[in-house]
Length: 132
Image (cartoon, rainbow, N blue to C red; front, side, top):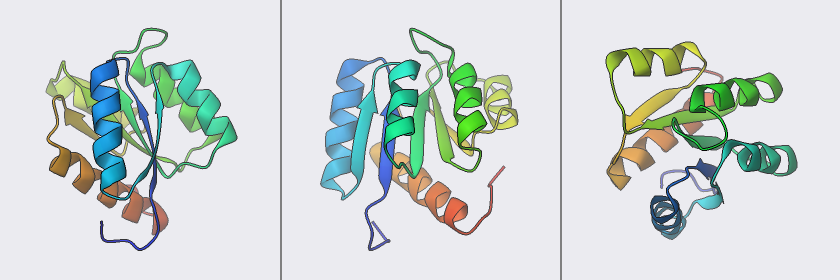
């Protein structure tokens, strides 16, 4: 990790194994990681804890990821958000970006790629830029 401070990441994904493994791997790389298995839990964490970047799955049990993204944007318009999707298409990616995501990844995303995107989004948000 390039920055000296810990980047706080919230992972929101209903795939328990993916959530646990990714959280552990990011923590080993020096990130402070919180997890949520659905949108409502993720929104509750955001209301109570400072987070720098959200990694948000598109398919959640309680709410579509784009709807969840719109809820996040209501309260925290400048928070960095990276969407994850296992159902990728150009249309899906564009919809995520139009709804305010900073970037998106195709699942399964290699950890190095996810780390790079987190770092870029974090840096861009700190400098006041929005990638897309």
